[in-house]
Amino acid sequence: MQNLNDLITRAEGLIDKLESLLPSAQPTVDWSATAWRWVVANNKGYLQAVAHPHQIQLANIHFVDTQKAEIVRNTRQFLAGFSANNVLLTGARGTGKSSLIKALLTEFSAQGLRLIEIEKQDLIHLADIVQQIRERPEKFIIFCDDLTFEASDEGYKALKVVLDGSIAHNSDNVLVYATSNRKHLMPEFMVDNLATRHLDGEIRPSDTIEEKTALSERFGLWLSFYAFDQDEYLSIAQNWLQTFGLPFDEAASKAALDFSLTRGARSGRIAYQFARDYSGKMGLAGKLK
Image (cartoon, rainbow, N blue to C red; front, side, top):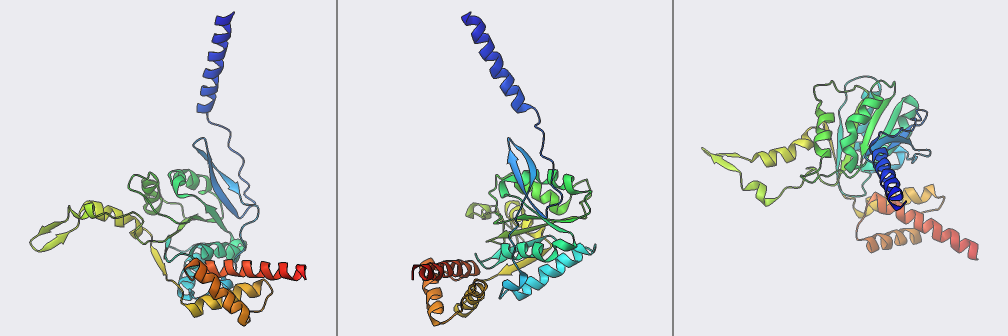
């Protein structure tokens, strides 16, 4: 009897392992949505609709007018069926890079723009995503935030294929918009320079360096963002505080500066966080009176 029970237990364990290897049924994609996240479970991914996308207005993004104009122009070309480029937004933290991409969805979703957010570690699934949306009538931006790679990351080659194409023609309804805090998406080390060669006075960098810088160059449009000065920071804080229905008086201005000092930086993100903190504080003080 004991042998029979052991056999049943082993058989059940084998069945469980076999079931884990079988392809699971993927959820039906809700194409009525305007934004999705690529969600991976058991090494299989699917598009999960975002019920309430972050509604950011282009008008609320300040002091990046040139960058804003360029990415809006590129996106308009894309929506109109003209040629357009993949975009890499690089530079200081909190200066509006990811907010600008989200604001494009708010601005152009009625014209057929859709957004798919993917994590860096899931970029190996890019070909699967493109295959799912290739025949759709909408225009899709695949959005990857804070994009950087280590040399061993498998997503590096997957992204290169989507940016440059493979034997299959790239889909005309897909662009990649990515943000990064550095322009070269892969780290560079001193050891990479050891292979640099000097031939007849010409300096030829090693193939390792060229490979690491090549990924950034595959984005057709580069937009650089820079840290804000104090006046720009205060202006952004004023704008956000006014969206919460509060005036930006002398007390609010001082509070905004104090808030930035505690964070050790001035950025649009910190200005927004200040506005949330200050408006909540004022609301709570009003209730306690």
